[in-house]
Amino acid sequence: MAPWALLSPGVLVRTGHTVLTWGITLVLFLHDTELRQWEEQGELLLPLTFLLLVLGSLLLYLAVSLMDPGYVNVQPQPQELKEEQTAMVPPAIPLRRCRYCLVLQPLRARHCRECRRCVRRYDHHCPWMENCVGERNHPLFVVYLALQLVVLLWGLYLAWSGLQFFQPWGLWLRSSGLLFTTFLLLSLFSLVASLLLASHLYLVASNTTTWEFISSHRIAYLRQRPGNPFDRGLTRNLAHFFCGWPSGSWETLWAEEEDSSPAV
Image (cartoon, rainbow, N blue to C red; front, side, top):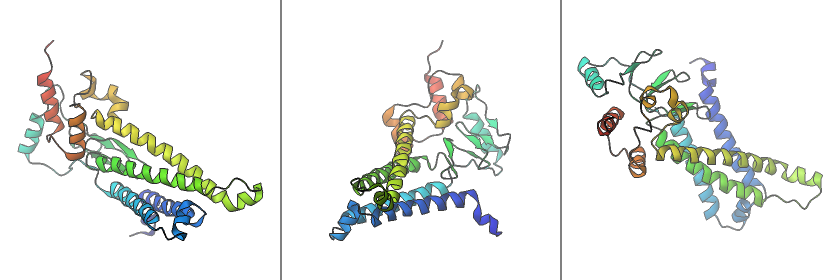
């Protein structure tokens, strides 16, 4: 393997995330925060819990960023399977052939130029993970956001607990400058994580993807019908997203919606 292959964008982004995560955690332990006070008093339950949450969020991040998001199979398929897939799609919505990788795209799939693959139930390409968020890793991505937000808010509280403002400016800057910078970073990350989690929970509740929400006017299977043809109500949307129930292809759901639509 060439040396520059180890410096791919994905490796750099994941390494940066890992270093930043443990660097912020180290700052919280080294300064006079409640975390350090608990440690000095021998109350190790909360510090260990915080460390386990940090480790859990980091492992979830790596899992989501490294796993297959749901790439469409590029291998040649038997003619019978191709005909079966085509038959499941209503005549008004023929399967599209991707102009980049030349595969037949199922409904809700989209080609990602960064990954150079078509992704099933494509949501978006996340630059912070250097991976797509799609049908396979989207549920885990939402769980990661929730856990990461818990860690960030707890870290924000810990950083604030260690800031001492009743000191001369020069002394305060030397003793608390790094901790204050950490507090600002955690504030920014907490805001971003909160907005992301709220937006994704809203989209999941309505069975919509980020790509469909932003580009519905350009997507044929959404442009031809008002409303969202995949919305089955809050309970069923959540059950399908997190548990895969009820099962079935998006083409099947579309056909059911087509049959149940009132005639004009």
